[in-house]
Length: 397
Image 1 (cartoon, helix red, strand yellow):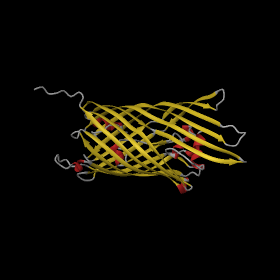
Image 2 (spheres, helix red, strand yellow):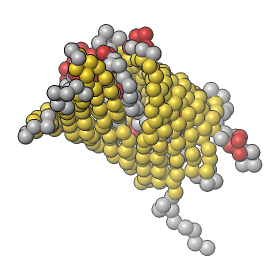
Image 3 (spheres, helix red, strand yellow):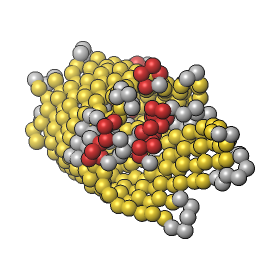
Image 4 (cartoon, helix red, strand yellow):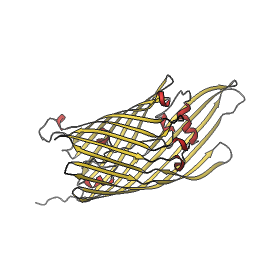
């Protein structure tokens, strides 16, 4: 079935309907790294981007910058447009992007908890065909994905050096359905359902430093994780075939920088790599999987610090550009690439103790000439960052 999923991307059936991303047919689906509203607005992952107003950092070292109990959550709405061989279609999608909670145990020491989706597989393909006067409709439907829940401990070793460790679980389920509906008499409809449940531990660490009180440098990695998979095959007979095996979620490593460009302008850039290997991942088509890359860069124009300034001047504005290559090739050995541009705003709330981050993104995935199909994705993300000093004692007069 994994081989079938990979073939979908390259054979390109005459499709009449699909939901969400057609490129999620490959492997474990589309992988998104949701790092929060501020980094997203700059098209980066925030690997070196300190932010005491937020939580949910991908780099565990950055959590120690939290000085109060902080909560962050984000949601995204996407509209997908795709085109292939002159055909066009669209789909809408809504999902939770991230939820995080950080506790400042004492200055420079933070305990955090983070949940976010890692991968998403959601598509439906319908092909009508006729072979030797037999009319039939083939329906390919897949859904599911992986999620990650983790705990983080982060320590400020010196004023300019932070370290962090993270450990947690990757888990999820996938369901792939192949259905044949015959309109010619004498033939019976058929349906095959593949179901897979996966779970495994994951851990890693991060580092952040500031050089000459100006240049922020961050790095983090997640070590390879072997996920246990329980698979069942239902062919609508009296028995269900089951099997067990493992797949490997690959080594993930990233590095980033952030540097002030002027008094109110901050620049940031980062790079992320995942060392995929189809022979070890066991996700089908071993020759089709390769190391994936992601690069992003952007700027933030900070709000004015004047307390009586107009509201529009107390908003942070962000712009960015990113490029990525997906972790599987087309059958013609061509890489599936994507690029994006983003615009974001950081809107202060509650006497600047909370912040609303709004992000508008455009993503171009695939190329009709190279991959046979392309997608245009319009996404709006909304993050709320709030916090209070839960354990702060009130002064007595």
